[in-house]
Length: 274
Image (cartoon, rainbow, N blue to C red; front, top):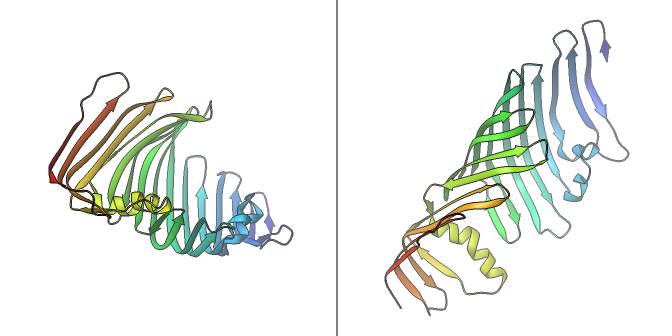
């Protein structure tokens, strides 16, 4: 531990709380520059339970690195997970062998902070009953933090094997609620969407399965003023077959728009089937 007229620093500090794993860190704060540096290297994920209430019920394991460099005008945060795992008591939500990185940078412009963030999940698997996902997720976003709002101007989420969507959001900090949000997808692989999103729900309720060949699907929505303002769902050039063989459709196309304050027209067509 070091304290002088220029800065306060603690090398290889350890934060302890009861029987919980210790949280090791290095910290340095320069008084004149109001500059903070914080580092945690190879730390036990479970050690976060010292600071985060309720974390222990997730039974976390693994290691992490954290680097923070910040002052009055800029901030940079780098976080990495290594071979992490977690689960609830009933294993209804769980993850294994997870590796992930988060990078966040921000610069101050007058009273506002302009920020950019990148999240990458290249390894591991997660289960949120009844859905399962094997890594391959990337999220890139940017926005603005002001005294009134936290704004996500543009965020792009990419799911390997499925497709991508672009979204935006405004959080009202004064009222502590979402003011507006919206998203639009690129053409998603319909067979993958059914397998990953719909089929687990059908299986959970012992309903017949659905096999999809070819085709894509699109979605979009906008929410504002406390209500959904518009929604769109579409299917393009898909062949569908129900697992019992009672229904099979080919060349399915659908365009289903909806607007809160206007009349819309849906279009559905099927080339053939039984």
